Amino acid sequence: MKTLDIKKLYSGGLITNYFCSSRCRHCLYGCGPEWERIYIEPEQAEKNLLKVKSLGCTSVHIGGGEPFLRPDGLLEVLKVAKKTGVAIEYVETNSSWFKDEKSACAILEKLKPHGLETVLVSVSPFHNEFIPFMKVKGVINACRITGVGIFPWMKTFIPETGSFDETSIHNLEEYEQRYGKKYMIDLISRYGLTMRGRALRTYAEKLNRRSLEEILKANDGGCYELSDVSHFHVDLFGNYIPGLCTGLSIRLEDLGKPLGIVDYLMLNILYEKGIGAFLEFASLNYGFRAEREYLSKCELCFEIRRHLVLNRKIVSKELQPGEFYSNV
Image (cartoon, rainbow, N blue to C red; front, top):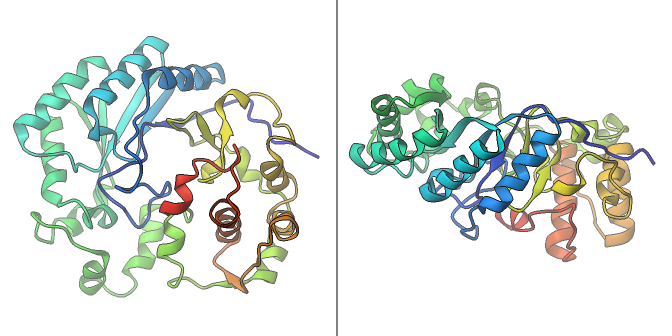
C-alpha cells in the first residue's frame, strides 16, 4: 500500500482553541460555544511550532475558534513563537471580544511588543449572524490607533454588512431578502468557501446532489489532497489536519515519516484508493449504509467518519478531535 508521508510543510496555522463566541454556518472546524473551553498550553504550542519549523515552515498564522477570547493565553503563544523563531503572520479574530475602544487598545498594546503585527478581522455575512458590525469596526479602529496591521477578510463585504443596523446581528436570510435568493450560492465563490465542515450542512439542500454511483465513478482514485501542505493547520491537542479535511488527523510526532498502516489505516485507504475503498471498508467492518445521493465525495467521507465516531464509538488518532463530529 502507498502510504501518506508528510515530509515538508509550506504555509499554515496554529489553532489555539475550538471554543468560539460564534457558531458560523460555514465554519470548517465546527467551532462554537458548545466546545470545551480549552486553550492551547505553552508547552504544546512550542512542540507544534518546533515541529513545523523542522519541516521547513518558519511562519504561521494563529486562528481558532476565537484566539482573543483568552488574551493572556494568546500572549503566551506569541512569546513561545518568538522563542522558537517562528514568525506570526497574523492572528484571526471575529471581533466578539470588543467592548470599547479603550479596553481593545489595551489588549492590542499588551500583545504588540510580543509579536502581534497584524490582525485578520473577519468581515462576512456568516460572522454578522453573531457579531454586530459595530464590533468589527471597533477592532479595526483599535488596530489603527495602536499601529497594528489590519487584514480585513473580506473587505468586499463591508458595504453589505454596513448596510444593515451596525449595532445588532443579522442572519443570512436577511441578506437573501435584501440581495436576492442567489445570495447564499454566490457566497461560495465570493468567500472562497471550503465545502467541508459545517458548510456541508448549510448547503445540503441548496446545491445539486449527485447519485452515489456518479460520485464513486468520478472519484475512482486516491484522495491526494490529503498530502496538500500549502495551507495546513496544527491544533491545541497536537493534531495535524491533512489537506483541510477536518475531522481527520495525524499526530504531530508522526509527521515527517510514512504513516504506518496499523495506526493510520483509514487515512492510507483514502490516500491510496479513495472514497470507494473507504466506503467499502466502513460498510463491511462497521455497518455503514450509504444514502442514494451526496453533495460530493467529501460529504460522503464526512458521513462515514461521523458514523464511526458517534454511532460506533470508534476512538482513533485518525479521527480527532472527536468533539468535532458532534459540533458540526
